[in-house]
Image 1: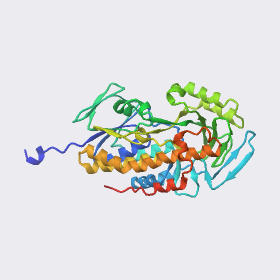
Image 2: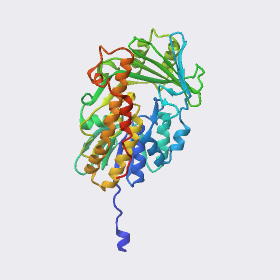
Image 3: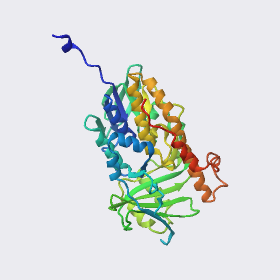
Image 4: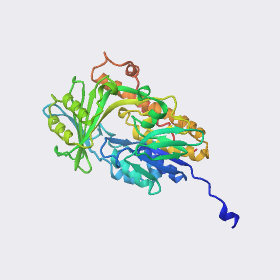
Length: 405
């Protein structure tokens, strides 16, 4: 037998990614392209439907272009043409075709797209070489200098060279490796809910905001989706109480909380709340930051909202997730097996950008509360941002460059 025929090929490094929303499939794409064996585990029984409209900006657009999916992302954009604001009776208070509350300036290069549409595009881009395990999750995670041993909820036990938690604000990976959620989640004083509904308002690529001044509610936002075939409804509730004390774990109880909060709201709210009870994609969660001193421990790293959520108030979560996934994959490729060096470099490259994204959220909330005249009870974390120029903070984002190592 020849020497060539008996030689073994080098073992491909194996990576388990927890979470199949935005960050996870983006990382999976690049790691697979760089020669890693990639497995993605997702708690849901398939790609999760529903979710809010999200924005792909700057570095996120560049990552999409490098993945060859930018045209597909543009083709599935929400394509909103403007927005209006209404009062209790449905009287129009304002109208603009220059921007929307959910997506910003209409003439910008940014792309607003539904979260589930973007997730599908990213997963499809990765191809069949990436293993997806749906309806499963990590129950036990142990690591040493050689590997990470995982026991899944299904009872299956496997070992991987590395594990990346891309499993969102309430990350199981983070809890198993870094400790309780309460150590890292910083509630920003509000809750955001979203669900799908029929487009019974007959909106045509349009968004309507319903304001409820002085109510402790953030009001409601209704936007069309998927060529006006459906609508997405967004509501907000102000509360300083953290999720552990405010947010029920049961979805029915969460819906009841929203229904009670908006029981006296007018306009189209009674009908929208009725649709909420029928919605299978209802979601309610805290507007929060995840702040951590380190995003890795041993052979486990965190990615996107799991490690450094900037909250919906930043408008940067999707862009941050896609850019960070690209950078992490680039560092792991260049490190040639030195995961510690790769994780350190990943954090060094991304943390300034992440810090700015999180600061944008604080500035945005502070400015909104000033507009609402709620300065007297303004939380200290927002008060120090009252005089910050929003455009100057946004300009800091443009200093970030998506350069290869």
